[in-house]
Length: 469
Image (cartoon, rainbow, N blue to C red; front, side):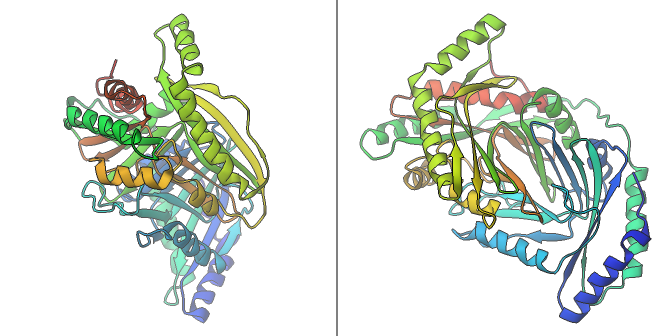
């Protein structure tokens, strides 16, 4: 890892400090340097002590971009209401207005970048389980490693105030970067003994599914997504880097993410893209309708055929396609949506999948699209407002960031958010796993219970618990 070269960016830092003094407000300074190849998991692990509770990790399914962030120079959290997405964007935009950039510029996923997510439902924020995250949590990292199409870049961010001196920052940053460099090692984590899995009232959850089915027969509700929690306990503290390492190995076709806050960590490997923005291009994905993987190739093909011809799954999928198509049509000049779904296969589950792409105007932000898409029918139901209200009143789970947008936005107008499913909340030596299912009028409680059991498996495997057969 390269150590900072003051001559490259010292004048930029002086400019930022001077602007802070003149305007009497904080100014974001960011410098990006191209560096030699570096393992992002090793970088993430190097911040374990100094930056515990202030780290994030992101890897897209194509492995075109991997980001690891250490430390927090600016945290953004807003009021829990219908304007929260706009408020996060407004705060992020304000920080960029006076920002000073140095070093390499224009590279997607580098430089000033904000990472974070939202809760599923801003109307349900009284959650002890998620009290470290609140309704929204985004932050700009102090140090960030970005692997962009195989090239490594190191971003250093500083928030300057009118009281700061540029030359003092130089010594401090060099000290911190040296500490990170000295802690870079191959990731090796010992075995953590698994103790137990705890399901909270499974029969009660099935009763809620039955109530949802009954309600749909006498209302306008077409679909409601219900989720449940599985708590697993280990002997020692769960090492998030070990979980990330296993997810990379086992869930290669998924978005791999984690977001730390204080002592907790939201982590997962989701197959579902909510939205990606690259320049004027927008991409989304319709992912609804699922079935297990077969134990051999013949059984797997049989299950795939069953999924592609199952009317419940096809209807559930079409709900999502229609909603995403309608939402993106509001911001896209042209839109491409395949007529029929294909099957996306992950290690434990296969899904009905329809990719969506379009072209938007230059002034459309990724936050505009998040506000229009979340929650999709795959996470909430249809009609959306009625489904989310029913979930709020009847579901006993504290969803928090589960099934919600999580991702990043850079200062060049690019960004990507995934849907936080196949995920877990790690708290010390325990973890809460989450899984949901789309309940339709012909659903059965036992069938939905089995489906959610299958959806626990990616995180159970990564954490070291007992898989559901």
